[in-house]
Length: 185
Image 1 (cartoon, one colour):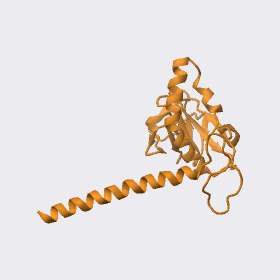
Image 2: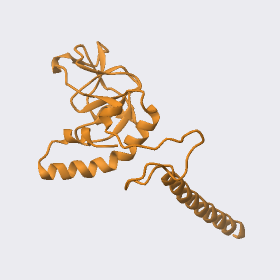
Image 3: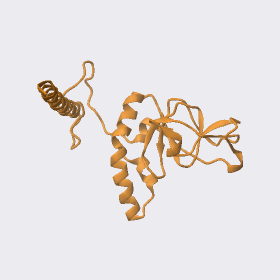
């Protein structure tokens, strides 16, 4: 019984330690980004980074390709043609995971592009691990090499929840979600 109590105490201590480390990490991460109320430099920097940060629009650092559904007659599961990414159902563990093919591709994403859903759920982010046709439920975000692609991906992941709230607000206001493409990062 004493051993069980000892292990229980050790587990509780480790859980508290883990929680404190998570809070510390969160604090450090916040210092790596400038104050969003007008700051241009983070209070903590990696060596070699000295320039001020600037707020840019997503379209300034990437090309955004809105999906376009091919003719439904071209859909198949016989592996004829190109992979087809239609929406959230074709994303698994934040990677493209197409279920169907199309013999008449319209808009294309490449391996390494960021995929974002533009229909419910709006704003879910993943990476394309396929050259594929993109349907109207997604867009492809192609980095222009002005920013690190992984950094851009992480920023978009951070915005997922913010977009969910913004899209809900836009829906209430009866505005087009495509306005979000022009929002600042």
